[in-house]
Length: 180
Image 1: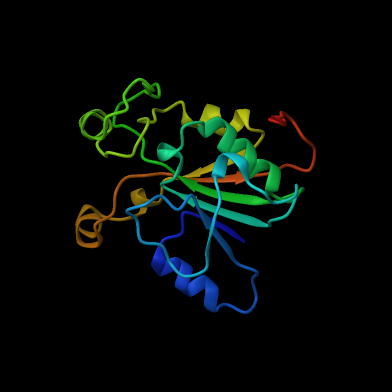
Image 2: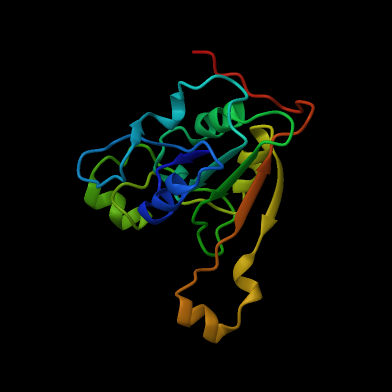
């Protein structure tokens, strides 16, 4: 299992499991705290071989990555074929049809105003699925919050965010090639 930008709670639990090989990677940006055993690595240029992992977990990462399409292609590349699974979550802007990104915005304060957080580089729209499919994945979307009542959503502090189950199919449909 490859865990990208691991959440400390999940990292601690996964590391204790004897039945999985667990690797956690992050870019190791100054100013952040990282769980133990996190390997410094850029998601846009993973150093793992093709078809290495059964599962990749990537939660709230892609909105921070300059070239998210390349990052998705890298996730696809390192997943085993057939049936490798990437579990991906990103924030999608409410009522936003198209992803917004403006790479001329470099100032942290301006990014916070525009994107809602100083280190985000885009606000995803409903077209996020197109980016995932373009990387070659077969995708199932889970709207897990819809299964809870309004009171439960409030009590548990849930946000209406989809989970994208991204499978590497047995036969390549649209493999991306970033060889540079």
